[in-house]
Length: 223
Image (cartoon, rainbow, N blue to C red; front, side, top):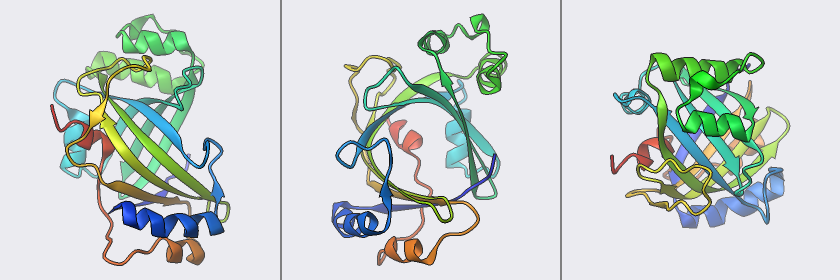
């Protein structure tokens, strides 16, 4: 599994109107997109000491977080993901889970799960038992995503970020989520060994600088 480079910028709606035509002209739409965008729902894990949250806030060099994720309200395809970061580089591992596995994880019955063929699920179950990881909060947002084959580049525009507060009804489409206290539009640029100059040029916006914004941290604003 490769580590990837990542830029994040906090931008606004006016910036989107500048970026969108540039991205559409140079890149392909992500396969998940419906009319150019899609809805993302994630359920993040943390322990009673808020390990993942504090490591992010404190800028710990080596850190990780686990989440469940699905798209466009489609609970027939759910991914378990682990995102790791070291020296500013990111790595993401993922595996598809069955609905039964997801329900067992959410209900904290990880000791019942047989996951010999899914090492990532095994790791989550072990850390739920050894570190006290448990479902913490839902994070919802709208995403526009673009891909560019050279450099394996992915550019995303994320907005309408909402939090489930303390709710973990991940599979309930009617679970209420509310806007976070401060939720800008987030421009993310990810690539492997090199970032093509054409992409580097089109994502440049005057006055915008890299940021360490975290959707999970933003959605924990209420507790």
